[in-house]
Every structure is written in C-alpha cells, then in structure tokens.
Length: 65
Image (cartoon, rainbow, N blue to C red; front, side, top):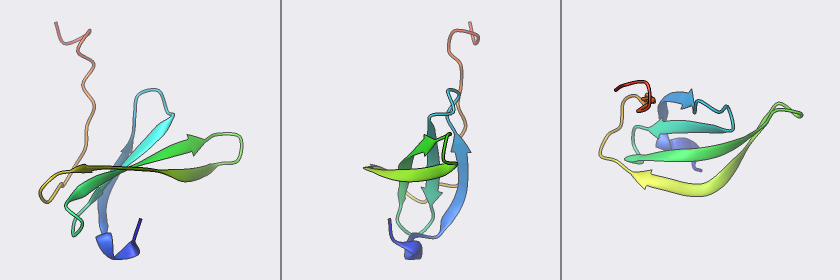
C-alpha cells in the first residue's frame, strides 16, 4: 500500500482478524490481517475498488432480522 493513498478511516472486522482502510485518493479499501500476538498488521494484497470511500461499518445480518 502506498502512503499517498491517504487513509481516511479504518475499522476492524467483527472477528478482529482484519483491518479495512478506506483510501481517499486510491479510491479503494485495503485489507490487512491482524497479528494479535505481535500487535502488527500485514497487507493481504487485496483492494476493493470504491469511488472515494469515507467510512466502513459492519452489519450483522443475523441480528438485523
């Protein structure tokens, strides 16, 4: 991930295994794996193209019913 992508916001998934970063200039959301034992992040190499993402939230569809 390039620092010029300017992360706007980020959030951990409900399992705490991944962190998702909304990249303002990169027009994407980058995915990082969380290593809880080391307290570090590792880029997974995965991007989701999204035009100008500003926030990421997770919805538990099982509870939404």
